[in-house]
Image 1 (spheres, one colour):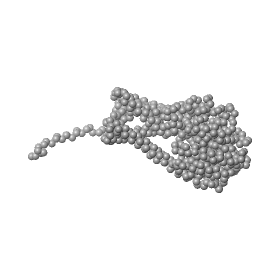
Image 2: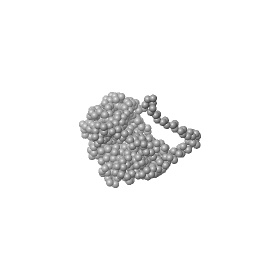
Image 3: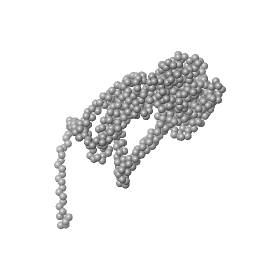
Image 4: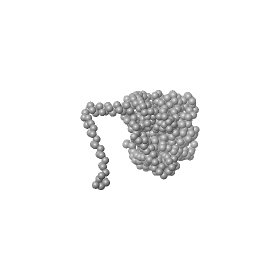
Length: 606
C-alpha cells in the first residue's frame, strides 16, 4: 500500500438534517409570514451593509433622508400658478434629491468632526420614529397641498375641481429620489475604483486628488456634452427643425401683395418657416376690417424675414442682411406710407402674438405695418440658453435699419414707430435699446408683455420704482411715461400724474413665472413675495431655498394652463395697451371695450 493509500480520508460531514418542511401556502400562512416580517422590520427598520466596501447596496443615511423629506414637504407649498399632480411629483423628487445631497454632506461633516456616534439602540429608535411620523405627515401635507391648489385655482378664475393623486405624487418623488441616489452612488463607486487603481501607480494623496479630478471632469463632460448638448438640446433642435417646415392647419399662402410670402414678395412662402407662415398667412383682409369697423379699411402690411440659413447655433448670423432685406420688403409693400409701423420682437421660435398684431390692425383699420425677424426656431427655453444674445442682436439690427430708413423721409412724413414684444420678444426689444431713456427717445411708444427677469429695462424700472409701489405693479417716475398693468383697464389709469407721450406700457401679471424666474431664487428670497402680494397670488405661498427655484421653473411649463390675465397669458390686454400708447384719432373708450371683446372672444388664428 502506498503512502497515499495509507493517508486517511477526511471524514465527510454528514448530510445536514432536513429542516422543517415549508408550511402550507395557505392565505393564513402567507398572512402570518407577512405579519412576522412587518414585525421584524418594526423592531429594526434599517439594514447594515455586510461590508464597508459596499457603495451602492447600502441603507440610506437617516440625516440625509430626514432632510430630503423636509424638502419634499416644502415642495408641496403652492407657487405662482396651479400645477398638475405629475409635475408636483417631479418637483417633489427633484427637491428631495437636493435635500438628500445636503443632508448627506451634513452627516459626513458631523461624523468627521464628532468622534462619538449614537449607539445602536438610539439609531433604531430614530429610524422607528421616522417611519412612524414621516408617512403620516407626508399624507397630511399632500392633502393640504390639494387644498391650497384649489384656492389658487379660484384666485386665477379656474374651476376649483382638482385631481390630486396622492399615491402617484409620492411614487414619482420616490422614484426620482431613488434614481438620483443610484446615480450618485455609481459615480462614487467609479471614483473609489479609479482611486484604487491609481493608488498602485501613484502616492496615495496624489491618487486621491487625481481620481477626484478625473471623476469630476467625467461627470461635467457627460452632463454638458452628452446629456445636455447631444441629448436635450439636440433633440429639441431636431423637433423644432421638423416643426419649422410645417404650417398650422388652416393657414394658407396669402393673396395680398402687402404681405411677405404673397404675390411679388421678396421672400418665398416656403422660406418663411412655421411661425413666419402662421404670421403672414393669418393677416386680416381689408374686407374683414371694413366689416368690423363699418368704415373703409386697407390691407395691412406684415413683413417677416426668417432665419437664413436656419442653423440654430451659427456664430456668424447675418443680422444686418436680415434687417436690410426687411427694409426692402417694407419699401416694396409701401409700409412707410402707413400711419403706424410696429417692430415686433419674436420669441425663440419666431412667434409673434396674433392678439397684439390684430389689435393694432383693427384699431387702425389696416393702416399699419408690422415687421419681425426670426433669429431661431428653437423653443424659448432653449433659445434662452443658447440664443438669448442673438435675440437682442437681431432685433437691434432691425430697429436700427428701420430708424435709418425713417430718417431719410421728409420731416413730418412717415409712420409712427412703435415696438412690441412678448416674453423673449420683450427682452429682444429691451436689449435693442438698453435703457428706458433710449427707448423713449428712439420710438413713439412701446407695448411689452411678460418680460423675463433678465430684461434690462424692466429690471431697471422695477429696481428704481417709486417706494410706495410693489414690484409686481411698479410705478416709475409717477407714471409720467411708463406704466405697468395686469388689469390694464384699471391699472393704467391708477397713477395720478399726467401721462405724457411717448408712452410705454408693460403688461405684467403678478403670477407670471416667466417674469419672476431667475437663478437667484435658489438662495435669495424674491421681492415679489413681499407683502402685499399680487391679486392672484395665494397667501399660503412661501419661499424655501432651492425649492422655490424648481417650483417656478416648473410653473413656466404650465404658465399657459390658466386664462388671461394670469400666468403667462395676456389675452386681449394688448387692445388697452395700444389704445394707451398710440390711439388713432377719434378713438374712444367705447371703441376699446368693443375691440377688447372681439379680440378676447374670437379664436386666434395660430
